Image 1 (cartoon, rainbow, N blue to C red):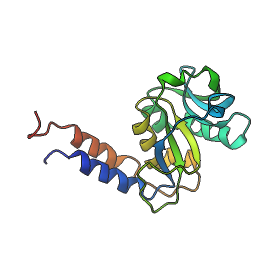
Image 2 (cartoon, rainbow, N blue to C red):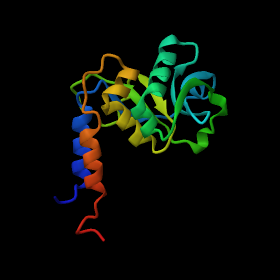
Image 3 (cartoon, one colour):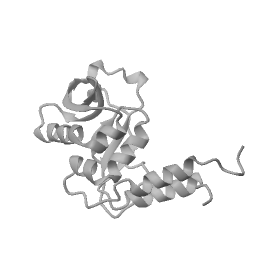
Image 4 (cartoon, rainbow, N blue to C red):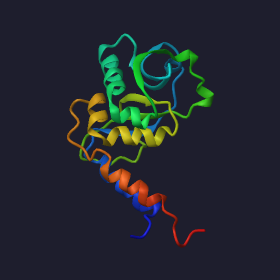
Length: 171
C-alpha cells in the first residue's frame, strides 16, 4: 500500500471529526483565562487539560471523566487524576494550548471557529491530542455526553501508521 499524503491524512481527519459535536481549534488565553482556578486533568500533578472553572460541577465532572478514561491516559502519556489548577501558575509563554470547541455534529471544521470553548489541552502536541479526544467516543462523551458513537481512533491510528511510512518521492 503506498504511503498516505499529508493532504489525504487531513481530509480523513476532517471526515472523522464530522460526526463529532467537538472540534479542535486554536486557543489564545485571555487575561481572565490566565488567572483563577480551573477544574483540570493532571498528570504527575501538572495540568494537561483545563475543563472550566473549578467551582463548576460540570467542569469538574468533565475533568473526572477524562481522568478516568483509559484512552485519555494513553493519549496524555500516563496515569491521570482530576483536580484543580491555579491558572496563574501555568507558564503561559511556554505553552501552545489547543481548545476543544463545541460544534454542531455533521459539519467538518477547519479549526477557525471560535464557538464555545469546552476544554483546553496544554500537553504537547496539543493539536493532535485535542483532535484525538474529539474523535473518540469515550473521551468526547466525557466532554459532551450528547456526542454520537464515533470512529474511536481506529481509522486515525491506521492513517497515522500509513502517514509515517517513508514516501518514495521524498528523501
